[in-house]
Length: 91
Image (spheres, rainbow, N blue to C red):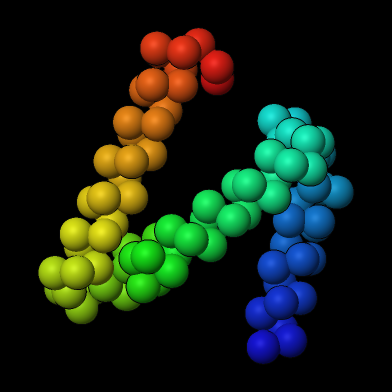
């Protein structure tokens, strides 16, 4: 577990030092970050798992629930991006 956590931290750090750190669009608004975290947590609880769990493990086991959840996640993301970018002009 320690090597996994170390890799999560050191791999992006090493990449950034070698090739430069990419610019991000992360907000500094604490209320927005907290709301986003809560929504992710609620969604994970409602779906009985996360996007990675359903997408990687669920699909590889041919789990109908995992496949359905993955399709729902993707559709929600596509719709949110379309509405935000093309209808509201936010992103």
